Image (tube, rainbow, N blue to C red; front, side, top):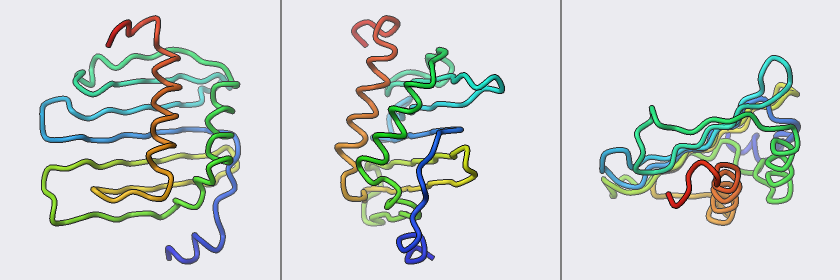
Length: 145
């Protein structure tokens, strides 16, 4: 199945929903996530939950199409569609770091990748860029957090 996904990669289009999360240990509230959802009127709602913050305190704000398109373009530029179907783990580690990426596009296609102590090529650069864009988006609200 993974081979088919590599041979026929997902065509990255306009984002309907984007969800990227990660865990970095077993401490309370250690997980983080970034999400973007298209609303019925075509606008988007972004959500940012930094590590160390309870889910109930995740930050939300309306964003425009340009922000969503910048995420799509980032995925195109970094060829993230090659990650579709990535699902690997290192079972020898019990309290490490994991990630999940789930994206749905308006063209009906989906991209999913998951890992625990295993990451696809380019993950560090992609996740760092996504984190930076969401932090910048919420900079006025988060202050020094």
